[in-house]
Image 1 (tube, helix red, strand yellow):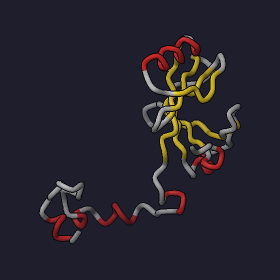
Image 2 (image 1 turned 180 degrees about the vertical axis):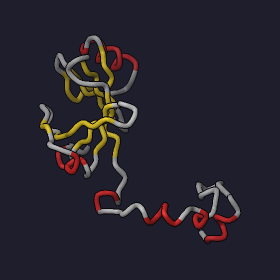
Image 3 (image 1 turned 90 degrees about the vertical axis):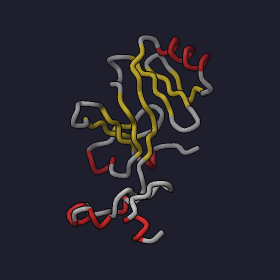
Length: 141
């Protein structure tokens, strides 16, 4: 790929639709990459609040190809091919997304959960709960 290819505005092969040199210099200078930022973070799970964990597990398993990685009365974790779905009882866990991020350790004290993962919750600017998981505590398949 040549710089001139970007100038044409082509996006046929996923190229930028504008020349990168059209971005302000501050776009590149204001962000200092650390080793923790060099790889993309991973979406670990999405957590939905449910009225009944066993009923929700049965419903999802009867409609989708997934397996139960963990289940008790307060929450369950369903494993799909590309991510997990946590089914949580209201009041015990907030609805949230879980992201595996090396920066989790920089945010605050970690809580160790029954499944062995360590995490900390933060809130995005819109008030959504985000669980940051320590990569060393997350099992990989």
